[in-house]
Image 1 (cartoon, rainbow, N blue to C red):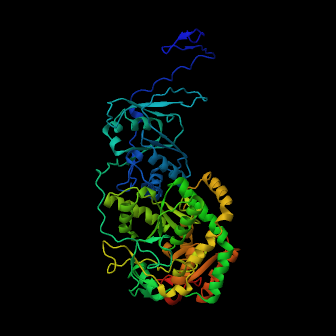
Image 2 (image 1 turned 180 degrees about the vertical axis):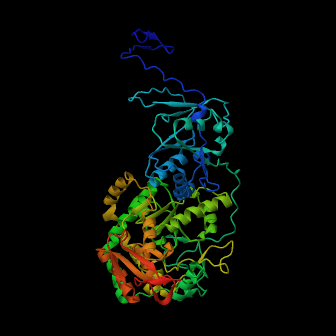
Length: 607
């Protein structure tokens, strides 16, 4: 009657008039048999993914940024295992997820597409019936019907996989969780048998079902001291930053650079167990610093504004800034100043220690969790190189959550410059000269790099650092901050435009810097990514406190590298210009070598 245009009374009292024209609906596709023919079935190949222990299989029980970082790090190896199990010459591959298990199979499919030359497609099984019509203009061309294989709470029933039959796939990778890896999955009329009847090669990958640990009360924090503040510790004003560190100023920790390098590379000591002798800049070098600061202050101010506005808009309206001491601390102070300048906000700011290979100071995290909501904490650093600290922080935050039950810390770092493409929150991805990178303590509040040594730092202590009060005459820490903050008004409008543009861009980290470092490490015969320091900031650090071997400079890098060339000349380090270098410069730390022994190319021979 409705199709004929009759008036149809509705229960709610309203009347509707409607009509229908056009050809009749297409007939339903014939229903496939419940079980495929035995002759068409073949046993699937099982692939051990090497799924990281304790990593959730998706968002059903919560999936934190730390979980995502672990998954992203493991994806290449898992995709490689699948690729090795695929048949030779496979040109079209389907990765088939399992109902709500979508995220992990989708990421595997994306990574597999990068690993193999085959065309990779993705879909999932479902409990939703859809009409299949084998017509070129229809979205659902075919369907497979099979019994549920995960012992569902609503009882046995049918499940569906669409557009597998007739899809022209050479192989299908079925990804299920361990709760769905049941006898019903492998039965003669189960999903795997149906897939084998339609696709020449079937692979099965099982993701361990995640069982969340029962909630527990957060660990009661130890009686930790209050943060250190200037002028008693550092030359910064007390409101600018609180240092979650212990004062080791009276301890002799400095060692000659060559001795430290040998101890670190031989495995006899960790770099955080001692300190390099503080570099005392020459008059010429100080002139370069001030000239560079004058030339780059507006550029830095703009990057500070962009990263701060991004944090306020995407991370938290009232963030707790936690800078990674010490390179991140001047940036944290500047972000705090921008929030006050632009929004009248007085943001809390603390500095904590993180050590490569040892993780973040867990006692500092305990203190922060006891005084602030961890969800408001934003970790801040100066720049990214190859991303080692980015990975270190993600692993450390997850370990802290597992050990203490304290969750909510987001390990994603906000940085002034991200030339390594390692983070999502940044002021710029250009590798440019940041004057705070070209000095040590005298541009960082007169604070040393952090120290972690068992005889000095107990289980309930903060990591340590020294306050070099005796260098006050050479201190430019506050002068650097003031010079940049003075340029805030003139860059405010361009910051707004840049933030809008950035919000529309794909900021997914590509880790291009890590790949470049791996290539350089092999090309120069170093074979250790820890001895390759990319970017202006990291290269400067190499020249100030390590034993540099050589400096690679991008052709045409210009004035940004004036201080690098000066330092290299003072230390007798060659600077080699390289075309198409992804960074402005790269510092190579001297590998251990047999004195006087070189290879055919004149490079040192490692032992």
